[in-house]
Length: 462
Ligand code: BES
Ligand code: MN
Ligand code: MN
Image (cartoon, rainbow, N blue to C red; front, side):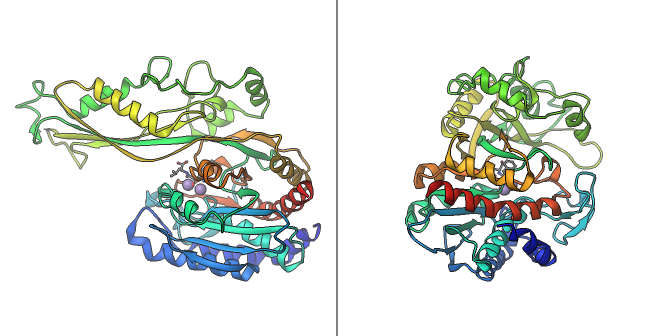
């Protein structure tokens, strides 16, 4: 397995240029104007699997964008690892904040990435991290080092909620059967602090519409005498947190699993600098639920956040108007054992109940997803920890993250498999933001570490 270092040294430039080519295609799943690009990316991913030595590759139709499949089955009696990733990306806007165009990748040095980082939409989330697996498998196949079977399942609508995936899993249970699922679509604490993600938050996402008068009104003639939906919406939203930043929706916390004091003490040992955190975000202070640390607030506690709010006049200058309608998009990040459908229902009931009689309310649910946690005493976790030990020379720290990958809970329900989340990105890599990037060192370290997981997992299970 030591050969992997030499293989990377020899093929490093090609590994980078192949990723750069993939990053040039704007596979934005949220915007139908890019549907051809999304499909083209699926084809490019399939070709990369073929080039790596995979067999049975296929672009599998779904109700939405296709899933790219490919495998290498060397012996049905050996364990099978299913690699999941996504080839779609978030929209790049706001465009004017990018220092270089989002789909024209460039490599630049940064403070945290002295060896350079690839700047492009999708560099870290998730084309770069997904492609580490393709290159790691290429190494293993071409050098006769593949110790077990591997299947790839790379989807194209993760960033819009993986709507077609539940059916896809049900319809292809046999094809996707596996012993363990491996995903790189999260992060790690720092380049010298490797960590393994042991938890993801769930998600409930709603859009609300508040309607006041039946048309926009002159704010002088009518102002003060009629409900202003923007004022009303803001007051309603403000009331969703109390003075301790607890969420006020009745029943919201009922199913939140209590994290033991031991586990919280364990979490508190992980390196975390509040000063560095504030400095990196240019905020004078943090804010969150009373009684919890910052690291707890973004990992083991549920949240409610307005993601967008609009209505009325927002153009140049001043227009004196009372809008007829106001809107907001609201996300709630969930933790075990909260259920997204139940939470959406609780939200809707509560939101309707706090609305003054003077306005009409409409709540539209968007996609959701279940939270996920995994234990550190499983074979999969232990094999992953050993792999990090081999390439970082350090024992990784288990870490629950705040983001969501809804498919992970579905994998457990439908395929009855556990997932190992080996992320190599950093929180500062600006995923979903302008100037997203992925460290060259991180990319290559991922390629180096992945084959060790295959080796140790196979050894520990046979
Ligand atoms: N890769 C992210 C999730 C992630 C990133 C988890 C970093 C942990 C650390 C994924 O692509 C994503 O953005 N998920 C969405 C949810 C989805 C339903 C749109 C999210 O978390 O907002
Ligand atoms: Mn992702
Ligand atoms: Mn994402």
